Length: 161
Image (cartoon, rainbow, N blue to C red; front, side, top):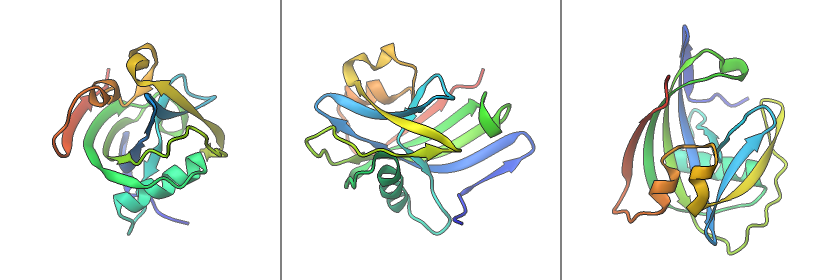
């Protein structure tokens, strides 16, 4: 069993995560599942001894059933949030995520058969221009995808209530 780069300390939880930004024809790919009322980025925990780039390629393949290639590191995201569901319910969470822009494939066809914590995940192509109509995390995604960038961006969000 692989060990994730993360730990718990009382009611606090930290994790190092790698995530993908996958855009095809004006749509960006998000994941969802029946236990959550929101969409979330494709990706997951980096394993001990694994690079973030290796982790994002592994996670994207696991979640979409498709081998995407990394284009470039786009965002380093520091995210603070309260978890309200699952095994982390009530936890004060701190996550560092590396967001990689993936190379487009020219198709939105996927072969998804992914599970997270025993629950089937579903993949959703959301229109970039209408992301504000969806409860989707990370919250910076719409603005990021609709603006020009020079190099890697460092984004900090605090979703704690």
